[in-house]
Length: 112
Length: 116
Image (tube, rainbow over all chains, first blue to last red; front, side, top):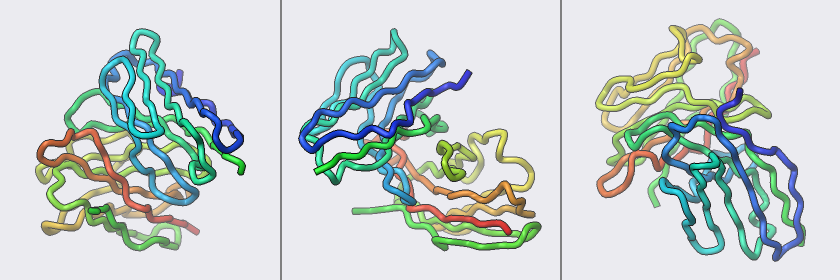
């Protein structure tokens, strides 16, 4: 059983749409959750970091964690063509520089 | 804004050769990591390094791999005898700074390793 599952897409939406990206995980020991954005052949770029169940908002991005369901989400409001990228969820066990466990990533295309 | 840098951007090598991938983490960060991403697959953890020693490693990180922090700024990954299946994008990351959490890992642009 894969530890972190993420629908690879691709997901195509028109500019201005609300995007919902999701991951599920099997290991209930995961405590810290991140979302990264990765453009083609580039390094992952940290977007959001959360550690508690509930919502965290940063500009057009909202990260949501439901530990009881082992489910995390990233919402993008007013999506822009520049948001077109692969979005990776990642999670880790502890706040001590542990390994990140990544999902495979969801490819997002925002069309003008 | 501080960033992680990596050299070279692309390395081509023959099977069986040794390669060294280099990284300069963000200044004052305390934890350093190597990850790899085989084309079309997920990013996989290799190793983490803290206080001049390995703090965690994955099953991928076998005896063919080693890491070193030779001075106060560089962090290297050595693959002793490369195999075809080592072809991947290798990412260096760093984390941990005063008032920040150790889990906010910042990635470099990667080194694409091609083993022929």
